[in-house]
Image (cartoon, rainbow, N blue to C red):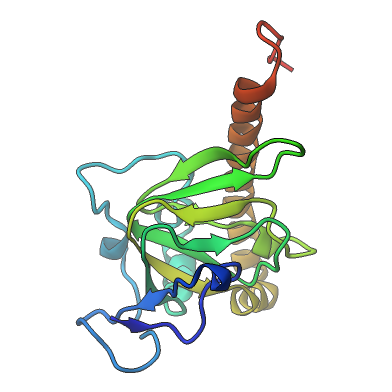
Length: 200
């Protein structure tokens, strides 16, 4: 493993640096890229937690193969801040191992954790939709290994191939809908008056 050329946005003030690894072990250069296969997205724990649609399940095989040529393998120490709410969304990740908490800023209250993500899940959806700024924050709660995608490259690929663009938009849209439901439920649990109707 080697130090990343630049840390994830919002992480510099904490002094932690993302680390990138190659598929064959330590590397002295930038994060290596390789074509990823379906086996790369098998659960790395005893079972897969199916909270949101995964790339493997959501995208047709040909679209998935094209996307899998682009990411680089990265790793984050526990406590790394991947991104902050309101910062520019210029990348996203698919988790291989570890867990990441999503949080939101609540005025006059402490930051609220709204969901915990684990292996094979998508971290970040704001990169796909203008104005491309993060709507939540994210922190690695354990050591994390992940595949990192450049948002500009993926958006360009989707523009060039409408079928791919539709598939990616549907996948990310389903993830977005799930995340919004989780955030709403969590905030109601934390802050709604006891006995308030949460069915709407």
